[in-house]
Length: 338
Image 1 (spheres, helix red, strand yellow):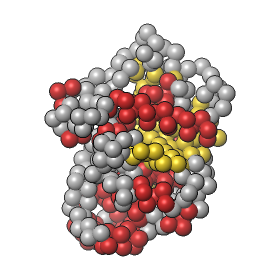
Image 2 (cartoon, helix red, strand yellow):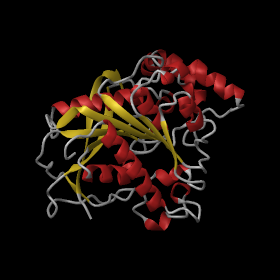
Image 3 (spheres, helix red, strand yellow):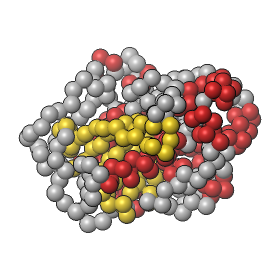
Image 4 (cartoon, one colour):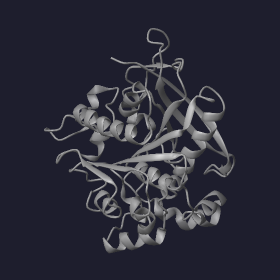
């Protein structure tokens, strides 16, 4: 089985405040990358998701600058939840950089702001790419002309924002009211919206972020995006901004997705631009089928995020998904041996 390198770190974005309003915004990151160190180095342990066949802090394989895939996790999750895909891409020659989005990641306490200000996620990835590519381990080893972005669930919103889709909270409210959706947030933070009045009065960071929700968060370095089971916040996008997108967009879904029902999310997104490619991975594939396996195998079938329909083989869905993603990346950003 192929082995890839793996390392983690934290950078600070001085242009934005953290949600506590007392320091710079942190961006905890994880990276998977090609390596030739197959028999030495430490392997990670104690992680919630299966870490897979990786070597911690391995050397980066000696080659030309590597193509890059930016990775955005789902609501309240971690980038390691998509480790199965990251490892596969790294073994194909890509450097995969995943951001754990402040206030909306399981690596730290949740903040209502992190569940309300989705647009900050796109900036996380842009800042991560710039910073990691210019200093430290990956400095001068990343090919900024070959960058793609892949996101799961709310990460699907993130990568679409990077591609140029623009947010309107008015649009989101119209959709929510038309469908009689009364929840003020996802199940990880169902009453997040109840915090808005208080945050408007007490949090400078929140007020600043809320005011810029409609800004353009596109990154011209992004050459293609893949949205896996895109979540309801995509309904905040202005239709015209999606219709005008010209870069390749691939949408992957499962037919049994109760968290991001296709009729509200992926179907609508695909209808906005006939150039988008859409793939359904199966009638009984659920939202969480796209997550990695747990390190503790006793959780399989007992916890909702690790439970699939009896007819679904999560490993095979991962294989199918990885194949589609790799094909789309090769068409859009790869060249030579990458």
